[in-house]
Amino acid sequence: MSQRPKIRCAIYTRKSSDEGLDQEFNSLDAQHEACAAYIASQRHEGWKLLPARYDDGGISGGTLERPALQRLMEEIEAGRVDMVVVYKIDRLTRSLPDFARLVDRLETADCSFVSVTQAFNTSSSMGRLTLNVLLSFAQFEREVTAERIRDKIAASKKKGLWMGGVPPIGYDPHPDPMRRELVVNAPEADVVRHVFTLYASHKCLAAVTREARALGLRSKRHVFSTGRQQGGNALSRGQIHKILTNPIYLGRIRHKDKTFPGLHPAIIERDLWDQVQALLQAASARRRGAPAGEPTGDAAPLKGKLRDDTGDLLTPTHTRKTGKQLRYYISNRLVSGGPDPAGWRLPAEALEQAVARAISDHLADHAKRHSVLVDADATSSIPASRAIADVASRISAKGSSLAARLITCGEIGHGRLALHLDRTALANTAALPAHDLNPALLALDVPFTCRRHGVEMKIVAGTRAPAPDATMIRALRNAHRWAAALKSGTPLTRLATDEKTSERYAARIIALSGLSPRIQAAILDGTQPMDLTLKRLLATSLPLDWRDQEQAFGFRT
Image (cartoon, rainbow, N blue to C red; front, top):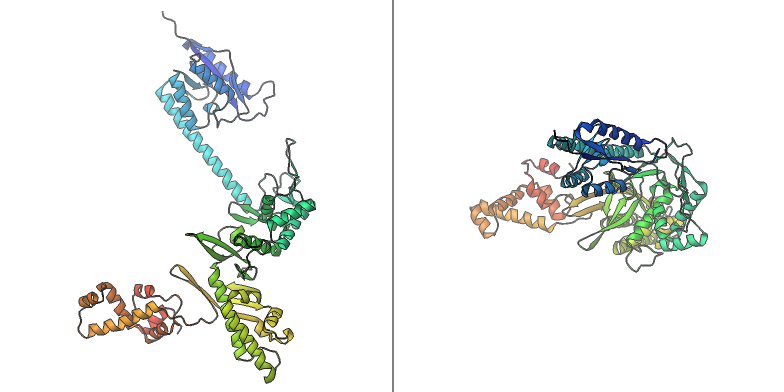
Protein backbone atom coordinates (compact mmCIF):
# COMPACT_ATOMS: atom_id res chain seq x y z
CA MET A 1 0.00 0.00 0.00
CA SER A 2 1.48 3.31 -1.12
CA GLN A 3 1.97 6.09 1.41
CA ARG A 4 0.09 9.40 0.90
CA PRO A 5 2.32 12.35 -0.09
CA LYS A 6 3.01 14.81 2.69
CA ILE A 7 1.28 18.22 2.43
CA ARG A 8 3.38 20.83 4.19
CA CYS A 9 1.06 23.33 5.87
CA ALA A 10 1.85 26.88 7.01
CA ILE A 11 -0.55 28.88 9.20
CA TYR A 12 -1.04 32.57 8.49
CA THR A 13 -2.72 34.87 11.06
CA ARG A 14 -3.48 38.58 11.03
CA LYS A 15 -5.12 41.22 13.23
CA SER A 16 -5.89 44.75 11.99
CA SER A 17 -5.25 46.58 15.27
CA ASP A 18 -2.56 46.11 17.88
CA GLU A 19 -5.10 46.19 20.71
CA GLY A 20 -4.67 43.21 23.03
CA LEU A 21 -1.55 41.84 21.33
CA ASP A 22 0.39 42.25 24.56
CA GLN A 23 -1.83 39.73 26.31
CA GLU A 24 -0.50 36.27 27.10
CA PHE A 25 -3.09 34.65 24.82
CA ASN A 26 -4.23 37.02 22.06
CA SER A 27 -6.25 36.90 18.86
CA LEU A 28 -3.29 35.69 16.78
CA ASP A 29 -2.77 32.77 19.22
CA ALA A 30 -6.46 31.90 19.00
CA GLN A 31 -6.36 31.85 15.20
CA HIS A 32 -3.18 29.76 15.19
CA GLU A 33 -4.66 27.25 17.64
CA ALA A 34 -7.82 26.77 15.55
CA CYS A 35 -5.78 26.31 12.36
CA ALA A 36 -3.42 23.83 14.06
CA ALA A 37 -6.39 21.80 15.26
CA TYR A 38 -7.78 21.71 11.73
CA ILE A 39 -4.45 20.53 10.31
CA ALA A 40 -4.33 17.80 12.96
CA SER A 41 -7.78 16.63 11.86
CA GLN A 42 -6.45 16.22 8.31
CA ARG A 43 -3.44 14.11 9.35
CA HIS A 44 -4.95 11.10 7.55
CA GLU A 45 -4.73 13.13 4.31
CA GLY A 46 -0.99 13.63 4.82
CA TRP A 47 -1.19 17.21 6.23
CA LYS A 48 1.79 18.24 8.35
CA LEU A 49 2.20 21.54 10.26
CA LEU A 50 5.43 23.44 9.63
CA PRO A 51 7.04 24.88 12.77
CA ALA A 52 7.44 28.50 11.56
CA ARG A 53 4.72 31.00 12.45
CA TYR A 54 3.56 33.80 10.15
CA ASP A 55 1.80 36.42 12.28
CA ASP A 56 0.98 40.00 11.23
CA GLY A 57 -0.32 41.99 14.18
CA GLY A 58 -1.69 45.51 13.84
CA ILE A 59 -1.67 45.51 10.01
CA SER A 60 -4.70 46.09 7.74
CA GLY A 61 -5.80 43.51 5.22
CA GLY A 62 -6.12 46.23 2.61
CA THR A 63 -2.45 45.92 1.67
CA LEU A 64 -0.12 43.06 0.78
CA GLU A 65 2.88 44.88 2.25
CA ARG A 66 2.91 42.76 5.42
CA PRO A 67 6.22 41.31 6.77
CA ALA A 68 4.91 37.88 7.72
CA LEU A 69 2.93 37.53 4.48
CA GLN A 70 6.00 38.46 2.44
CA ARG A 71 8.09 35.83 4.28
CA LEU A 72 5.36 33.28 3.67
CA MET A 73 5.20 34.07 -0.06
CA GLU A 74 8.99 33.68 -0.28
CA GLU A 75 8.72 30.20 1.30
CA ILE A 76 5.88 29.28 -1.06
CA GLU A 77 7.76 30.39 -4.17
CA ALA A 78 10.81 28.48 -2.95
CA GLY A 79 8.66 25.31 -2.97
CA ARG A 80 8.74 24.74 0.81
CA VAL A 81 4.98 25.18 1.46
CA ASP A 82 2.12 23.21 -0.13
CA MET A 83 -0.89 24.55 1.77
CA VAL A 84 -1.66 27.86 3.49
CA VAL A 85 -4.17 27.57 6.34
CA VAL A 86 -6.07 30.66 7.56
CA TYR A 87 -8.84 31.16 10.10
CA LYS A 88 -10.96 33.19 7.63
CA ILE A 89 -10.25 34.29 4.09
CA ASP A 90 -10.28 37.98 5.07
CA ARG A 91 -7.21 37.26 7.25
CA LEU A 92 -5.30 36.71 4.03
CA THR A 93 -6.71 39.71 2.13
CA ARG A 94 -9.72 42.05 2.05
CA SER A 95 -9.23 43.09 -1.56
CA LEU A 96 -10.56 41.18 -4.54
CA PRO A 97 -7.77 42.41 -6.88
CA ASP A 98 -5.14 41.47 -4.26
CA PHE A 99 -6.75 38.08 -3.88
CA ALA A 100 -6.57 37.48 -7.63
CA ARG A 101 -2.84 38.30 -7.58
CA LEU A 102 -2.26 35.98 -4.61
CA VAL A 103 -4.13 33.11 -6.27
CA ASP A 104 -2.01 33.52 -9.41
CA ARG A 105 1.18 33.34 -7.33
CA LEU A 106 -0.10 30.34 -5.36
CA GLU A 107 -1.12 28.44 -8.50
CA THR A 108 2.24 29.18 -10.11
CA ALA A 109 3.95 27.66 -7.05
CA ASP A 110 1.45 24.73 -6.98
CA CYS A 111 0.19 25.80 -3.56
CA SER A 112 -3.38 25.98 -2.23
CA PHE A 113 -4.98 27.55 0.81
CA VAL A 114 -7.89 26.67 3.03
CA SER A 115 -10.08 28.54 5.50
CA VAL A 116 -10.86 26.49 8.61
CA THR A 117 -14.16 28.30 9.33
CA GLN A 118 -15.42 28.24 5.72
CA ALA A 119 -16.01 24.91 4.05
CA PHE A 120 -13.87 25.16 0.91
CA ASN A 121 -10.30 25.30 -0.26
CA THR A 122 -8.62 26.44 -3.45
CA SER A 123 -7.37 23.03 -4.42
CA SER A 124 -10.63 22.55 -6.41
CA SER A 125 -12.31 24.69 -9.06
CA MET A 126 -15.53 24.83 -7.03
CA GLY A 127 -13.57 26.07 -4.02
CA ARG A 128 -12.00 28.86 -6.10
CA LEU A 129 -15.42 29.87 -7.48
CA THR A 130 -16.93 29.97 -4.00
CA LEU A 131 -14.01 32.01 -2.74
CA ASN A 132 -14.39 34.57 -5.50
CA VAL A 133 -18.10 34.94 -4.71
CA LEU A 134 -17.42 35.39 -1.00
CA LEU A 135 -14.71 37.97 -1.60
CA SER A 136 -16.99 39.86 -3.98
CA PHE A 137 -19.62 40.08 -1.26
CA ALA A 138 -16.97 41.07 1.28
CA GLN A 139 -15.81 43.91 -0.99
CA PHE A 140 -19.43 44.96 -1.55
CA GLU A 141 -19.99 45.04 2.22
CA ARG A 142 -16.91 47.22 2.71
CA GLU A 143 -18.07 49.69 0.05
CA VAL A 144 -21.58 49.83 1.54
CA THR A 145 -20.09 50.40 4.98
CA ALA A 146 -17.93 53.24 3.61
CA GLU A 147 -20.98 54.85 1.99
CA ARG A 148 -22.91 54.47 5.24
CA ILE A 149 -20.14 56.22 7.14
CA ARG A 150 -19.99 59.06 4.60
CA ASP A 151 -23.78 59.48 4.78
CA LYS A 152 -23.64 59.52 8.59
CA ILE A 153 -20.96 62.23 8.55
CA ALA A 154 -23.01 64.33 6.10
CA ALA A 155 -26.19 63.92 8.19
CA SER A 156 -24.33 64.80 11.39
CA LYS A 157 -22.85 67.94 9.85
CA LYS A 158 -26.30 69.01 8.66
CA LYS A 159 -27.28 68.95 12.33
CA GLY A 160 -24.33 71.21 13.13
CA LEU A 161 -22.18 68.56 14.82
CA TRP A 162 -18.38 68.66 14.87
CA MET A 163 -17.18 65.33 13.45
CA GLY A 164 -13.72 65.30 14.95
CA GLY A 165 -10.21 66.05 13.78
CA VAL A 166 -7.92 68.87 14.87
CA PRO A 167 -10.19 71.80 15.84
CA PRO A 168 -9.47 75.18 14.21
CA ILE A 169 -7.83 77.99 16.13
CA GLY A 170 -10.43 79.66 18.33
CA TYR A 171 -12.22 76.47 19.33
CA ASP A 172 -11.67 73.32 21.42
CA PRO A 173 -13.67 70.06 21.47
CA HIS A 174 -16.40 69.96 24.11
CA PRO A 175 -15.12 68.63 27.46
CA ASP A 176 -17.84 65.97 27.35
CA PRO A 177 -16.62 63.46 24.71
CA MET A 178 -20.23 62.38 24.11
CA ARG A 179 -21.13 65.87 22.83
CA ARG A 180 -19.84 66.51 19.33
CA GLU A 181 -19.64 70.27 19.69
CA LEU A 182 -17.01 72.96 19.73
CA VAL A 183 -16.53 75.44 22.54
CA VAL A 184 -14.83 78.81 22.24
CA ASN A 185 -11.19 79.07 23.34
CA ALA A 186 -11.21 82.70 24.50
CA PRO A 187 -7.49 83.57 23.98
CA GLU A 188 -7.45 81.95 20.52
CA ALA A 189 -10.78 83.61 19.64
CA ASP A 190 -9.13 86.98 20.26
CA VAL A 191 -6.42 86.02 17.75
CA VAL A 192 -9.10 85.18 15.15
CA ARG A 193 -10.92 88.48 15.72
CA HIS A 194 -7.62 90.33 15.49
CA VAL A 195 -6.84 88.69 12.12
CA PHE A 196 -10.25 89.67 10.70
CA THR A 197 -9.91 93.23 11.98
CA LEU A 198 -6.41 93.54 10.53
CA TYR A 199 -7.56 92.40 7.11
CA ALA A 200 -10.57 94.75 7.15
CA SER A 201 -8.10 97.55 7.88
CA HIS A 202 -5.14 96.64 5.63
CA LYS A 203 -7.07 94.88 2.80
CA CYS A 204 -3.87 92.95 2.01
CA LEU A 205 -2.80 89.44 3.08
CA ALA A 206 0.90 90.27 2.96
CA ALA A 207 0.41 93.31 5.21
CA VAL A 208 -1.71 91.28 7.65
CA THR A 209 0.96 88.55 7.75
CA ARG A 210 3.67 91.09 8.60
CA GLU A 211 1.49 92.75 11.24
CA ALA A 212 0.54 89.39 12.78
CA ARG A 213 4.24 88.46 13.10
CA ALA A 214 5.01 91.81 14.70
CA LEU A 215 2.17 91.31 17.20
CA GLY A 216 3.30 87.76 17.97
CA LEU A 217 0.06 86.07 16.84
CA ARG A 218 0.52 82.28 16.83
CA SER A 219 -1.25 79.32 15.28
CA LYS A 220 -3.15 76.81 17.41
CA ARG A 221 -1.01 74.52 19.54
CA HIS A 222 -2.47 71.00 19.55
CA VAL A 223 -1.30 68.01 21.58
CA PHE A 224 -2.27 64.59 20.20
CA SER A 225 -3.14 61.60 22.38
CA THR A 226 0.29 60.15 21.57
CA GLY A 227 1.95 63.22 23.09
CA ARG A 228 3.04 64.63 19.72
CA GLN A 229 2.69 68.42 19.53
CA GLN A 230 1.75 70.54 16.53
CA GLY A 231 1.44 74.29 15.87
CA GLY A 232 2.21 77.24 18.08
CA ASN A 233 4.19 78.94 15.30
CA ALA A 234 3.89 82.38 13.68
CA LEU A 235 0.85 82.59 11.40
CA SER A 236 1.72 82.11 7.73
CA ARG A 237 -0.03 83.80 4.82
CA GLY A 238 -1.82 80.53 3.96
CA GLN A 239 -3.01 80.03 7.55
CA ILE A 240 -4.35 83.59 7.66
CA HIS A 241 -6.24 83.10 4.39
CA LYS A 242 -7.69 79.84 5.74
CA ILE A 243 -8.87 81.63 8.88
CA LEU A 244 -10.47 84.45 6.86
CA THR A 245 -12.40 82.02 4.63
CA ASN A 246 -13.46 79.43 7.22
CA PRO A 247 -17.25 79.71 7.79
CA ILE A 248 -16.86 77.95 11.15
CA TYR A 249 -16.13 81.39 12.63
CA LEU A 250 -19.60 82.47 11.49
CA GLY A 251 -21.10 79.63 13.53
CA ARG A 252 -21.46 77.25 10.59
CA ILE A 253 -20.20 73.75 9.78
CA ARG A 254 -18.83 73.08 6.29
CA HIS A 255 -19.39 69.82 4.43
CA LYS A 256 -17.79 69.74 0.97
CA ASP A 257 -19.23 72.79 -0.86
CA LYS A 258 -22.10 73.50 1.54
CA THR A 259 -22.38 74.96 5.04
CA PHE A 260 -24.94 74.35 7.77
CA PRO A 261 -25.77 76.13 11.06
CA GLY A 262 -23.47 74.72 13.74
CA LEU A 263 -24.13 74.06 17.42
CA HIS A 264 -21.09 76.15 18.35
CA PRO A 265 -21.21 79.94 18.89
CA ALA A 266 -19.86 82.31 16.24
CA ILE A 267 -16.66 84.26 16.85
CA ILE A 268 -17.06 86.79 14.02
CA GLU A 269 -20.09 89.04 13.48
CA ARG A 270 -21.93 88.79 10.14
CA ASP A 271 -21.13 92.38 9.09
CA LEU A 272 -17.37 91.90 9.59
CA TRP A 273 -17.51 88.51 7.84
CA ASP A 274 -19.33 89.98 4.83
CA GLN A 275 -16.92 92.89 4.66
CA VAL A 276 -13.86 90.60 4.69
CA GLN A 277 -15.34 88.22 2.10
CA ALA A 278 -16.11 91.15 -0.20
CA LEU A 279 -12.54 92.43 0.18
CA LEU A 280 -11.08 88.98 -0.51
CA GLN A 281 -13.20 88.58 -3.63
CA ALA A 282 -12.30 92.07 -4.80
CA ALA A 283 -8.60 91.41 -4.17
CA SER A 284 -8.76 88.21 -6.24
CA ALA A 285 -10.13 90.27 -9.15
CA ARG A 286 -7.53 93.04 -8.78
CA ARG A 287 -5.72 93.82 -11.99
CA ARG A 288 -2.04 92.89 -12.06
CA GLY A 289 0.14 95.70 -10.75
CA ALA A 290 -2.65 97.51 -8.87
CA PRO A 291 -1.71 98.76 -5.39
CA ALA A 292 -2.38 96.17 -2.70
CA GLY A 293 -4.13 98.69 -0.50
CA GLU A 294 -6.62 99.44 -3.28
CA PRO A 295 -7.85 96.01 -4.36
CA THR A 296 -10.05 96.90 -7.28
CA GLY A 297 -10.15 100.62 -7.97
CA ASP A 298 -13.17 100.88 -10.29
CA ALA A 299 -13.11 97.16 -11.10
CA ALA A 300 -16.05 96.58 -8.71
CA PRO A 301 -17.51 99.98 -7.76
CA LEU A 302 -20.66 98.45 -6.20
CA LYS A 303 -18.83 96.12 -3.81
CA GLY A 304 -20.23 96.35 -0.31
CA LYS A 305 -23.13 98.51 -1.52
CA LEU A 306 -25.91 96.08 -2.44
CA ARG A 307 -27.69 93.18 -0.78
CA ASP A 308 -30.14 90.66 -2.21
CA ASP A 309 -33.70 90.13 -0.98
CA THR A 310 -32.47 87.80 1.81
CA GLY A 311 -30.10 90.45 3.17
CA ASP A 312 -27.02 88.68 1.80
CA LEU A 313 -24.26 90.95 0.50
CA LEU A 314 -23.60 90.96 -3.25
CA THR A 315 -19.93 90.13 -3.68
CA PRO A 316 -17.81 90.87 -6.77
CA THR A 317 -16.23 87.88 -8.46
CA HIS A 318 -14.97 86.96 -11.91
CA THR A 319 -14.26 84.07 -14.23
CA ARG A 320 -12.42 83.59 -17.51
CA LYS A 321 -13.92 82.37 -20.74
CA THR A 322 -11.93 82.07 -23.97
CA GLY A 323 -9.24 84.23 -22.43
CA LYS A 324 -11.64 87.04 -21.50
CA GLN A 325 -12.38 88.03 -17.90
CA LEU A 326 -16.09 88.15 -17.08
CA ARG A 327 -17.15 90.02 -13.92
CA TYR A 328 -20.19 89.26 -11.77
CA TYR A 329 -21.88 90.27 -8.54
CA ILE A 330 -23.10 87.19 -6.65
CA SER A 331 -24.84 86.53 -3.34
CA ASN A 332 -22.10 86.00 -0.77
CA ARG A 333 -23.56 82.64 0.34
CA LEU A 334 -22.65 81.25 -3.08
CA VAL A 335 -18.99 81.87 -2.16
CA SER A 336 -18.95 80.22 1.26
CA GLY A 337 -21.91 77.87 1.04
CA GLY A 338 -21.99 76.48 -2.50
CA PRO A 339 -24.92 76.42 -4.97
CA ASP A 340 -28.23 78.05 -3.96
CA PRO A 341 -31.10 78.38 -6.46
CA ALA A 342 -32.27 81.56 -4.69
CA GLY A 343 -28.85 83.20 -4.93
CA TRP A 344 -28.20 86.06 -7.38
CA ARG A 345 -25.53 86.00 -10.08
CA LEU A 346 -25.63 89.20 -12.12
CA PRO A 347 -23.23 90.37 -14.84
CA ALA A 348 -21.30 93.23 -13.29
CA GLU A 349 -21.21 95.68 -16.20
CA ALA A 350 -24.93 95.39 -16.91
CA LEU A 351 -25.80 95.82 -13.22
CA GLU A 352 -23.49 98.82 -12.81
CA GLN A 353 -24.96 100.51 -15.88
CA ALA A 354 -28.53 99.83 -14.74
CA VAL A 355 -27.85 101.24 -11.25
CA ALA A 356 -26.13 104.34 -12.68
CA ARG A 357 -29.02 104.91 -15.10
CA ALA A 358 -31.59 104.55 -12.31
CA ILE A 359 -29.80 107.14 -10.14
CA SER A 360 -29.30 109.50 -13.08
CA ASP A 361 -32.99 109.29 -14.07
CA HIS A 362 -34.06 109.74 -10.44
CA LEU A 363 -31.97 112.88 -9.96
CA ALA A 364 -32.95 114.29 -13.35
CA ASP A 365 -36.65 113.77 -12.57
CA HIS A 366 -36.35 115.66 -9.25
CA ALA A 367 -34.42 118.42 -10.98
CA LYS A 368 -37.12 118.73 -13.65
CA ARG A 369 -39.85 118.95 -10.97
CA HIS A 370 -37.79 121.40 -8.85
CA SER A 371 -38.08 119.11 -5.83
CA VAL A 372 -34.41 119.15 -4.87
CA LEU A 373 -34.60 121.26 -1.70
CA VAL A 374 -36.92 120.94 1.31
CA ASP A 375 -38.02 124.57 1.41
CA ALA A 376 -37.03 126.82 -1.44
CA ASP A 377 -38.25 129.80 -3.37
CA ALA A 378 -37.67 130.37 -7.06
CA THR A 379 -34.30 132.03 -6.53
CA SER A 380 -32.82 129.03 -4.68
CA SER A 381 -34.78 126.20 -6.34
CA ILE A 382 -33.68 126.90 -9.91
CA PRO A 383 -29.90 126.83 -9.31
CA ALA A 384 -30.26 123.79 -7.01
CA SER A 385 -32.21 121.94 -9.68
CA ARG A 386 -29.58 122.88 -12.25
CA ALA A 387 -26.83 121.54 -9.95
CA ILE A 388 -28.63 118.20 -9.47
CA ALA A 389 -29.34 117.99 -13.22
CA ASP A 390 -25.63 118.51 -13.82
CA VAL A 391 -24.86 115.63 -11.42
CA ALA A 392 -27.33 113.44 -13.35
CA SER A 393 -25.57 114.34 -16.61
CA ARG A 394 -22.17 113.56 -15.13
CA ILE A 395 -23.42 110.17 -13.95
CA SER A 396 -24.72 109.45 -17.45
CA ALA A 397 -21.28 110.34 -18.82
CA LYS A 398 -19.07 108.67 -16.18
CA GLY A 399 -21.38 105.77 -15.34
CA SER A 400 -21.07 103.69 -12.19
CA SER A 401 -17.81 105.19 -10.89
CA LEU A 402 -19.59 108.39 -9.80
CA ALA A 403 -22.94 106.77 -9.04
CA ALA A 404 -21.41 104.21 -6.67
CA ARG A 405 -19.83 106.95 -4.55
CA LEU A 406 -23.30 108.36 -3.87
CA ILE A 407 -24.80 105.05 -2.63
CA THR A 408 -24.86 104.18 1.06
CA CYS A 409 -26.74 100.89 0.63
CA GLY A 410 -29.22 99.18 -1.63
CA GLU A 411 -31.33 96.06 -2.02
CA ILE A 412 -32.16 94.05 -5.11
CA GLY A 413 -35.29 91.95 -5.11
CA HIS A 414 -37.42 90.24 -7.68
CA GLY A 415 -38.96 93.11 -9.61
CA ARG A 416 -37.53 96.04 -7.63
CA LEU A 417 -34.35 97.92 -6.80
CA ALA A 418 -34.18 100.13 -3.70
CA LEU A 419 -31.24 102.52 -3.22
CA HIS A 420 -30.34 104.99 -0.48
CA LEU A 421 -28.04 107.87 -1.37
CA ASP A 422 -25.51 109.51 0.93
CA ARG A 423 -26.71 112.99 1.84
CA THR A 424 -23.20 114.39 2.38
CA ALA A 425 -21.71 112.81 -0.75
CA LEU A 426 -24.53 114.08 -2.96
CA ALA A 427 -24.39 117.56 -1.41
CA ASN A 428 -20.63 117.77 -1.93
CA THR A 429 -20.91 116.56 -5.53
CA ALA A 430 -23.62 119.11 -6.31
CA ALA A 431 -22.05 121.86 -4.13
CA LEU A 432 -25.30 122.28 -2.18
CA PRO A 433 -25.96 122.50 1.59
CA ALA A 434 -26.55 118.95 2.88
CA HIS A 435 -29.26 119.94 5.38
CA ASP A 436 -31.35 121.58 2.65
CA LEU A 437 -31.69 118.48 0.44
CA ASN A 438 -35.14 116.96 0.07
CA PRO A 439 -35.23 113.50 1.83
CA ALA A 440 -37.15 112.14 -1.17
CA LEU A 441 -34.06 112.90 -3.28
CA LEU A 442 -32.02 110.43 -1.21
CA ALA A 443 -34.16 107.32 -1.73
CA LEU A 444 -35.41 105.60 -4.86
CA ASP A 445 -37.40 102.42 -5.35
CA VAL A 446 -37.73 101.48 -9.01
CA PRO A 447 -38.74 98.44 -11.08
CA PHE A 448 -35.91 95.98 -11.71
CA THR A 449 -35.90 93.36 -14.45
CA CYS A 450 -33.21 91.08 -15.80
CA ARG A 451 -33.72 88.77 -18.73
CA ARG A 452 -31.45 86.82 -20.99
CA HIS A 453 -31.19 88.06 -24.56
CA GLY A 454 -29.25 85.40 -26.46
CA VAL A 455 -25.97 84.95 -24.59
CA GLU A 456 -26.27 88.40 -23.01
CA MET A 457 -28.10 89.28 -19.79
CA LYS A 458 -30.18 92.45 -20.09
CA ILE A 459 -30.78 94.39 -16.86
CA VAL A 460 -33.12 97.35 -16.56
CA ALA A 461 -33.66 99.40 -13.41
CA GLY A 462 -36.30 102.12 -13.46
CA THR A 463 -37.88 103.41 -16.65
CA ARG A 464 -36.42 101.74 -19.67
CA ALA A 465 -35.01 103.95 -22.39
CA PRO A 466 -36.27 103.17 -25.92
CA ALA A 467 -34.02 100.60 -27.61
CA PRO A 468 -35.00 99.96 -31.25
CA ASP A 469 -33.95 96.52 -32.49
CA ALA A 470 -32.66 96.92 -36.05
CA THR A 471 -33.10 93.21 -36.79
CA MET A 472 -36.80 93.22 -35.85
CA ILE A 473 -37.43 96.48 -37.67
CA ARG A 474 -35.84 95.11 -40.86
CA ALA A 475 -37.89 91.91 -40.54
CA LEU A 476 -41.11 93.92 -40.06
CA ARG A 477 -40.42 96.00 -43.16
CA ASN A 478 -39.71 92.85 -45.19
CA ALA A 479 -42.94 91.32 -43.88
CA HIS A 480 -45.05 94.17 -45.25
CA ARG A 481 -43.12 94.35 -48.53
CA TRP A 482 -43.32 90.61 -49.15
CA ALA A 483 -46.98 90.47 -48.14
CA ALA A 484 -47.76 93.22 -50.68
CA ALA A 485 -45.89 91.25 -53.35
CA LEU A 486 -47.99 88.15 -52.62
CA LYS A 487 -51.20 90.19 -52.84
CA SER A 488 -50.11 91.51 -56.23
CA GLY A 489 -49.83 87.94 -57.53
CA THR A 490 -46.11 87.11 -57.07
CA PRO A 491 -45.77 83.38 -56.19
CA LEU A 492 -44.01 82.57 -52.90
CA THR A 493 -41.45 80.43 -54.76
CA ARG A 494 -40.42 83.30 -57.01
CA LEU A 495 -40.41 85.74 -54.07
CA ALA A 496 -38.08 83.48 -52.09
CA THR A 497 -35.79 83.07 -55.10
CA ASP A 498 -35.62 86.82 -55.72
CA GLU A 499 -34.90 87.52 -52.02
CA LYS A 500 -32.36 84.68 -51.89
CA THR A 501 -34.04 82.93 -48.98
CA SER A 502 -36.11 79.81 -48.38
CA GLU A 503 -39.86 79.64 -48.87
CA ARG A 504 -40.31 78.53 -45.25
CA TYR A 505 -38.40 81.51 -43.87
CA ALA A 506 -40.20 83.94 -46.20
CA ALA A 507 -43.58 82.59 -45.05
CA ARG A 508 -42.62 83.02 -41.37
CA ILE A 509 -41.51 86.62 -41.98
CA ILE A 510 -44.67 87.47 -43.95
CA ALA A 511 -46.77 86.32 -40.96
CA LEU A 512 -45.32 89.25 -38.97
CA SER A 513 -47.39 91.65 -41.09
CA GLY A 514 -50.37 90.39 -39.08
CA LEU A 515 -48.97 91.66 -35.76
CA SER A 516 -51.21 94.06 -33.85
CA PRO A 517 -50.61 97.77 -34.55
CA ARG A 518 -49.55 98.24 -30.90
CA ILE A 519 -46.81 95.60 -31.17
CA GLN A 520 -45.57 96.97 -34.48
CA ALA A 521 -45.48 100.52 -33.12
CA ALA A 522 -43.51 99.34 -30.05
CA ILE A 523 -40.96 97.58 -32.28
CA LEU A 524 -40.46 100.71 -34.37
CA ASP A 525 -40.18 102.92 -31.25
CA GLY A 526 -37.90 100.48 -29.40
CA THR A 527 -40.31 100.17 -26.45
CA GLN A 528 -41.08 96.47 -26.90
CA PRO A 529 -40.63 94.14 -23.87
CA MET A 530 -37.02 93.14 -23.21
CA ASP A 531 -37.59 89.48 -24.03
CA LEU A 532 -39.37 90.15 -27.32
CA THR A 533 -36.90 89.15 -30.04
CA LEU A 534 -37.18 88.17 -33.69
CA LYS A 535 -36.33 84.58 -32.74
CA ARG A 536 -39.25 84.49 -30.32
CA LEU A 537 -41.60 86.08 -32.86
CA LEU A 538 -40.73 83.50 -35.51
CA ALA A 539 -40.95 80.58 -33.05
CA THR A 540 -44.45 81.55 -31.85
CA SER A 541 -47.67 80.63 -33.59
CA LEU A 542 -49.33 84.05 -33.78
CA PRO A 543 -52.92 84.22 -32.47
CA LEU A 544 -55.38 85.87 -34.83
CA ASP A 545 -56.79 88.11 -32.10
CA TRP A 546 -54.57 91.17 -31.53
CA ARG A 547 -55.30 91.25 -27.79
CA ASP A 548 -54.18 87.64 -27.50
CA GLN A 549 -50.96 88.56 -29.34
CA GLU A 550 -50.25 91.44 -26.99
CA GLN A 551 -50.90 89.29 -23.93
CA ALA A 552 -48.65 86.50 -25.26
CA PHE A 553 -45.74 88.89 -25.80
CA GLY A 554 -45.96 90.67 -22.43
CA PHE A 555 -47.82 93.87 -23.34
CA ARG A 556 -49.90 95.11 -20.45
CA THR A 557 -53.59 95.57 -21.16
